[in-house]
Amino acid sequence: MKVPDMSDWTIHLVILGLGISVMLGLSRALRRVARGRSLTQDDVVLVDSITQNVAQGVYVVLSILFALVLATANGVDDNVITEAGQIQSLDQLLAFEATPQSEQARIVLRSYTQSIVEDEWPQLPDKHGSTATKVKLDALLGSIQNLRPESIQQVALLPEIVRTTQALDRSRDKRLLNSQSVLPSLFWFVSGISILGLIIVSALRLMEATWPSVVVHVVQLMMVGALFSALMILNAPFSGSTRTSPDAIVHILQALKGSRP
Image (cartoon, rainbow, N blue to C red; front, side):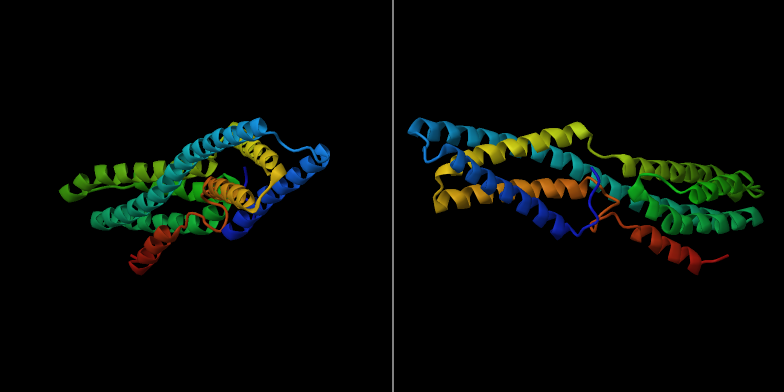
């Protein structure tokens, strides 16, 4: 499910307003269909029991999905920080290598890092990477292969440079995979059916509405709607107003430009 291009508060308000409007509108329609017939005491007990069971089921489903999505979102942020650290470590290792080839590799590394921020990050909401960034990554891998260590220290640094470069390559793959990792349609279908069921049984109960019952069911639906809208927002970590930021990589890029060889 793609997050609409709206602020988080707008998404929350739209979901809440839509749910409450449907519930109250359906309740009014049911009262018209009933034509003055009221619920019996047995009906009230049955509807209250079903409402409680359905509400518990909705909370369980949404809470499980929310925990999964939140763990994924936290993992995305951690991966960005890790990727930024790998860029910084690779630049330091290349600086210690201190050969003409390593200095050229540092220039390519800066170009690749800048491409991440300027070329690739804007494309992550569309769930794919940048061809320009991939080309610069390949150029970085090629420049690492061209290193020609001479001293004992340079030879000792080479394996660590290669490992860090490979880790940086895997971090990009993981970032692209994270941009494509969303909940399957089945989860949204189950969530939607669960919320719809809660709206229907709440509307049945509100056929004989009192102010306390209206407030209780509206608050209950507000809690469910808030959880569902938060699920929508967190499910797209690179979209919406609450998105994963490249600030960690931008900070490293600025440091690399400041240490230009």
